Image 1 (spheres, rainbow, N blue to C red):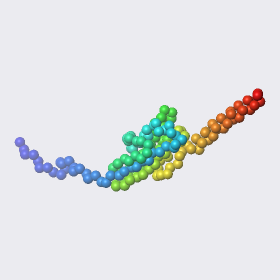
Image 2 (cartoon, helix red, strand yellow; image 1 turned 180 degrees about the horizontal axis):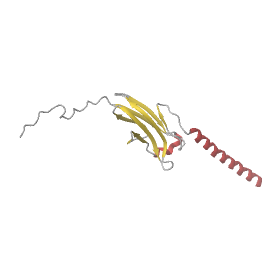
Image 3 (cartoon, rainbow, N blue to C red; image 1 turned 90 degrees about the horizontal axis):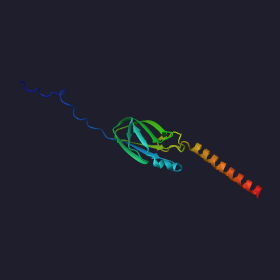
Image 4 (spheres, rainbow, N blue to C red; image 1 turned 180 degrees about the vertical axis):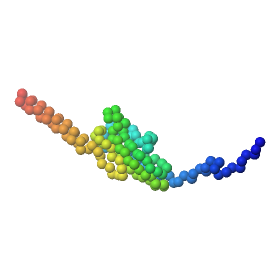
Length: 152
């Protein structure tokens, strides 16, 4: 039949694009020592709707340069997410963006995400609830001592 047509630039697949320098996202995921039970939960890191493997401490994630929507939370039963935090980030070629996430001390508070250092959200409420608990224990102890002395 006919000989094959000579290749033309538009009939060939495009050459592979030379990837630019990689960008790095470094996430330091922290919890307060008072929230020691959170160590049993694996943090969830979500970039543009895709879950990435996460852990407590430094997470180094190589990514192509561009804009991302970053979301972190801790999965739980009630509430289903502890400390949700969101941030829009822009990664430049060849750069490293260092961010810190701090899980809240009070489970119903939001997490803190951004450049270090971040605040411990929910700390005031956790201290207030602890103070109320200690006050009630002190009141019960005082009532017990008063009843014991008055009956004895």
